[in-house]
Amino acid sequence: MRILVISQYFYPENFRINDLVFSLQKRGYDIDVLTGKPNYPKGEYYEGYSWKGPKEEKINNINIFRANLFLRKSGGGIRLFLNYLSFLFYGTFKIFCINKKYDKIFVYAPSPITVGFLGYFAAKKFRCKSYLWVHDLWPESVKLAGGVNNKFILSLINLMTKIIYRLNDVILIQSPYFEKYLTSQGVNSEKIIYYPYYAEDFYKPEKKKSEILKKFPKGFNILFAGNIGVAQSLQTIIKAFELIKSKNINVIFLGEGRDKKRIQELINKKNLNKKFTFLGSYPAEYMSEFFSCADALYISLKKAKIFSYTIPGKLQSYLACGKPIIGSLDGIGKKIIMDSRSGLCSNAEDHLKLSQNIIKLYEMSDEERNILSKNAIKYFKSNFEKEKLIDKLIEVFN
Image 1 (tube, rainbow, N blue to C red):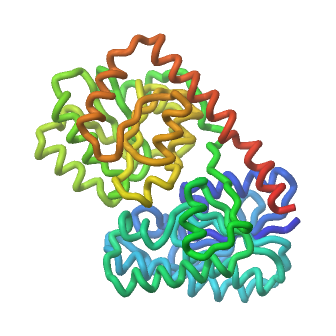
Image 2: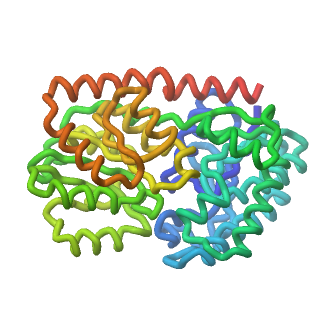
């Protein structure tokens, strides 16, 4: 079976579509990828890439077709919108330049959802089915997390989203809570299939490494890994630490993002510099080594109905690594933490309850925290194990 994968982001950018593509290739599938020029998350071209090229390349014997992009750089909502539209425009041109045949079109849509148009165009050209894997609910998520507030742009995105859902043959959703929203948007429930993230093989329990431990402050360390953005509402844990700053507890941020500067300024303003450490960004392959040196892993989202529907991608990674989880979020994310009995979770933006949960976990015995760790791994293997989910996707294709 020959599959064209369409995603605005692909290797060397760090997205889960990378592992899925390489895993399908190992299963014997012939995969090509249509993607953009790598620039995420800073909005600048990676070394070796520019507007001029490369237009095509091979990675692990996979053909990569690269479309040009309008770079977002450090701009706001308008530049983000132009970034998304540029991939739609240049990606469409690329599709009609590809002289191959495909059996399936698989569209990875964490953002932007506009990539779904490319799935439809490709399906029409190659006369096959399109499978759209939806990770965010538009336009609400782009309004809350992407900084887009222009009413005209939001109404245009809403119209485009409804058309995209209707045009694609199969809609895969990363959270079961998405179905109700999509059906309210006019999507036929029969074309909706729950297909969550899995965690890559390198997410697993590891022994502590001295070279990583040296980067950590002394004390009880809570680690947050991933995008430092508006959607993550990281001010919640800062407010929580105002209440527990006398305790020997620290927070480590592992990642980058548009909201990093504001978060650092807030920490300085609250005189909490000694409690928060920023280690920058590292390749995903090293995450397990950092996780192993932490005492707990932190996950949070902004308080908004739309975010209560989503399963944050880092949750599967946290569970796979078997560390106690501290959460500050609503909906399905909170439900998973509680159902798995892998940690403690407060409602989104409830800094008082979060501070209490942090103290509760801090005061637990090693044996009690080990039980949480074992529960996390058990739940992960039952619900988000990689090979099981790849098997499920192949069943969907067949």
